[in-house]
Length: 384
Image (tube, rainbow, N blue to C red; front, side):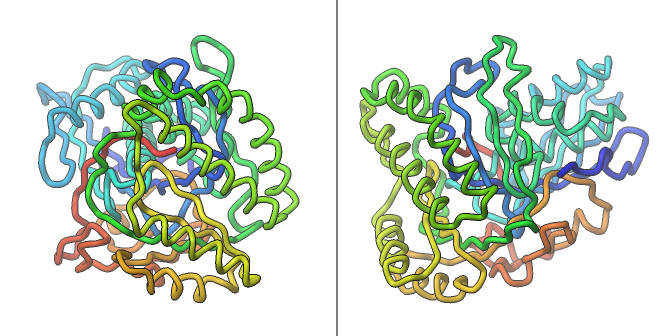
């Protein structure tokens, strides 16, 4: 599913875009080239709908340096990442203009909900449009990957596969759509068990795992079989098969990280109880499975008729702060000024779930302040 080739331009070199986070069903963990963000394994993900990042990029020739607003403030380390990402676009356009960047989320950041994936996908889409490059989605995916690995997948909607590639320059490590969201509209209940940033970011976690975990080679060697099984399950709409391979990949990734030195423990007690509850529900015949990225949030993926039962069960667990419902959404796309400042997501081909998600402008769990505009949040680490 291709996104719009251009975002709406508000000035000669200004544009806005939105992207949604994605959650990997077959996990990405480990890099073969850290500088280019080339993964050691391929991955398969689903792009969410009700959660979003919105970014405005305005290239202003008079600026002496990039001005980056993330979470309402300028963080030097994060601004450096944003500037490096913009440099890729400036190089393509043959300009050296600095830019003003305003990025905002409607969900917790750096806590295992893929804020960097949606953040850098939105940045690439808006920056591409502001400079008039008109890159196709594959090119945007490659550039987004350079900024944050899993951002390559958030360029696309629905079910997405990111190839690990074999070329040294990474030009074949690109994401592509497997199935549109509307073709198999599963639902996701996200159990928020913490809003704190994780202690060890994904990039550092991957580096530590590759250097010290005794299971690294087995992880790499078994990934192709997992990808084949998940791809077949998705194309056949086989929920039971997708549930089995997704939970297997999730637990295998965390076992890999737990075996690092020192071990990486991204879960908390509520995370474990959520996983146990999901398995109990499935034992009772409820079509649901869990997946957990490098963070404490548990995503319960289910068939549409089961979503209310799944949300209710997760809300009963001590330590669960909130349960956010979302469907599957579209890839990165253009925004108007009205959409950029709106609380809700623009309607996409996946359908908007903002009104049903439990995300509200006054909710601290969702990452909002009490004002109508979403709170600005900072991007840290990567999704899986």
